[in-house]
Length: 105
Image (cartoon, rainbow, N blue to C red; front, side, top):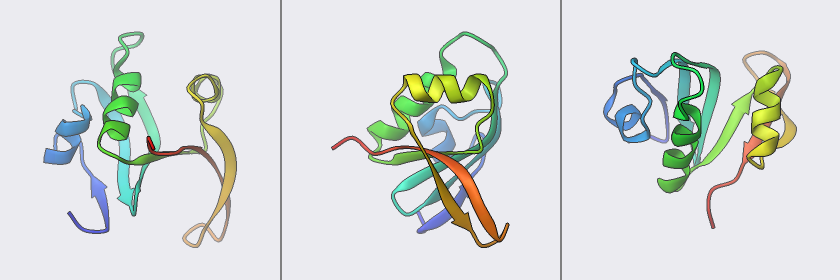
């Protein structure tokens, strides 16, 4: 696996995390020791798919960063121990809200 790469739905790594097209729409990508999550939506609500995704990512040794979560997602992330911060994104030429959960020690 390269240092930075997009993780597509139903790809080998996507399947390892449970990031499959029957469960989600959205985007994941790997940068260093983090998996970034953006614009994710569970296709089947209240089945625990998002929680399982986070669990599998951390089991694989990665920290998780969620970009610009809105509304209910902020509540969910806070409940799961994510910390809000900002990160400069050169592509956007601005700071972006990012919620972070570090990898398991």
